[in-house]
Amino acid sequence: MAKYIFVTGGVTSSLGKGIIAASLAKLLQARGLKVTIQKFDPYINVDPGTLNPYEHGECYVTDDGAETDLDLGHYERFLNIPTSQANNVTTGRIYQTVINKERAGDYLGKTVQVIPHITDEIKNRMLLLGKGGKYDIVITEIGGTVGDIESLPFVEAVRQIQWELPEEDCMVVHLTLIPYLKAAKELKTKPTQHSVRMLSQEGVQPNVIVCRTEQPLTEDLKKKIALFCNVKPNAVIEAMDASTIYEVPLKMLQEGLDVIVLKKLEINGYAAPELTKWRAFLDKLKYPQSKVTIGLIGKYIELQDAYKSILESFIHAGAINECKVQIVNVHSEFITHENVKEKLKDLDGLLVAPGFGNRGVEGKIIAVQHARENQLPFFGICLGMQMAVIEFARNVLGWKDAHSTEMDEKTSHPVIDLMEDQKNISNKGGTMRLGAYPCEIQKDSLAYNIYGTATISERHRHRWEFNNKYITDFEKAGLIPSGKNPATGLVEIVELKGHPFFIGVQYHPELKSTVENPQPIFVSFIKAAKEYSEKKNTVKTSSLQGEMSS
Ligand code: GLN
Image 1 (cartoon, rainbow, N blue to C red):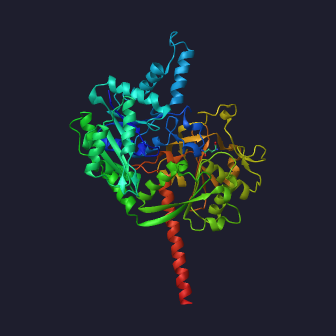
Image 2: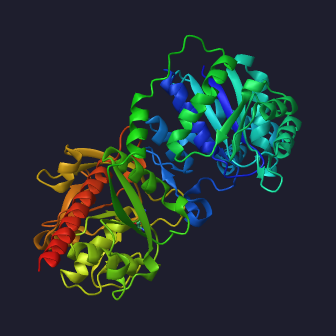
Image 3: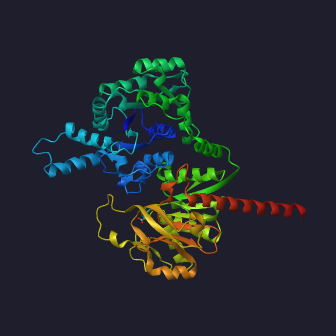
């Protein structure tokens, strides 16, 4: 049996519970323990797959095809191990299971209630990953804020687990905010006291308090928090704002969070933390040798969480290239033929983002055309790849109304079409082509150069696909389908002959980039952007020299 750590949040949302949970997990992993993290979300949606990115940020997808909360992305990026269906559970999923059991008659005539039936189902799922010997420690992040009505059954389940398990097998870390009042020049502990009191009223006494703060906590303040929140002074941990989320594990190490946890869980004989790779990554991240500017063309750019994994992948790929990647967000809805040159003029590379529906697609197509015609490094992901296919069909093959049937059902050239097995699907939840599928890469291609292997596996989330009816037309004209699903022939990768770096992928490579394993396409894309930028600068300098000598 594994040991369990629960992470709750108080005072306000957006404190970064996911990052604290992932940082603690990283430290325990670095000390030789096998750790996983799971997230329990209190909303009624069965999963976040049907949520608009504006509501909930990016929908993260696991290898086994679960549509999950974006925190799972952090867990994978930090721990470098995959998560699965079991790592994200919502209230909706709990109720769905309980109601299905009720309909099947499994409760044998009993009245089905929140306690014990809902809480039992929550507990089963909370303990599930810890059975089977795969992990020493399971960290469970409880979504929402303590005091919310909807998270009550989760907190009650934690209370029961704490009561059922031996003292040393379970603990609670509570993340809270210590606000700084500028006018009073003081850090305030009262909101934290209240949130811990609320948690205690629900029957859960935290063992560790992690305090998000903009100012350092003095020893006196820590003592005060400890006294009023009923924990030992060394169990009050300062979590100052960090310049990057990847610094948080080192800050937590300094504060001794992992040691307190190991003591409470009575885990002895642990190794010193092995963080050499992590530190090397951070060094490269902090001291880049060069800089590139990448345009992120999307329609959800007001909300950066919508492209979380893409942005993090750029951080990983930048670090390994010792290059700062500056992202310029370009709203695709406002790109026109008239302004495209001006809008994209400072870029060293262009990424066209995934997406759904009609809004903003014409701007994406115009941006692709600009990259294709100006030798600007281009990387299209999912819808971004589909837009590259449409652009090529319209402007190179001359099929003026070429489109995806997602946007135009009547187009005479449906170069992107609904997948056959999607045609009879009416339910929206969990029905896309989801999760990891293999892809066979053609040798002598850019993709093969990038991956260095012919068989890869990447994760998917889409309903439309490249229409194979047109494959030879595209190939003849220079857009090469260089990667295909070996079983179905579905085109997974397209690339452009004669262009320094032009690649579109039907899958989501950003979902597999981690600190220790930066995703290869992102790494090569940044390399190409660096070369583009160097070339641009040489041209600038030589024309400047020309001007000065003439
Ligand atoms: N809307 C497109 C499809 O479903 C692209 C999806 C995406 O970008 N994730 O095929």
